[in-house]
Image (cartoon, rainbow, N blue to C red):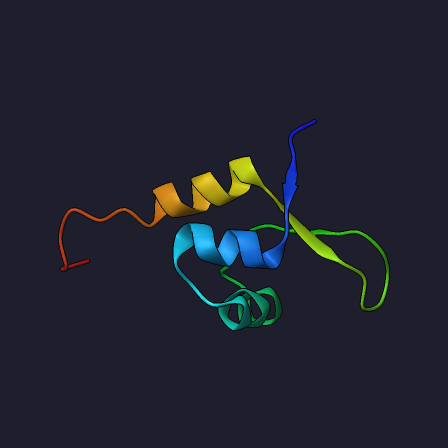
Length: 64
């Protein structure tokens, strides 16, 4: 099993704030995540999911 990343590690890796990650978990459109327990449990991200998200954001033009 691959290592799971916490919010701070992911935010630093892709250049966003932890707040952005949290907001995207609520509103959608962010990186798939794993909730380790019910309620206010820890959230983790798989490295592969983070890389796929970043790769999906690559653009070759500003139009579109």
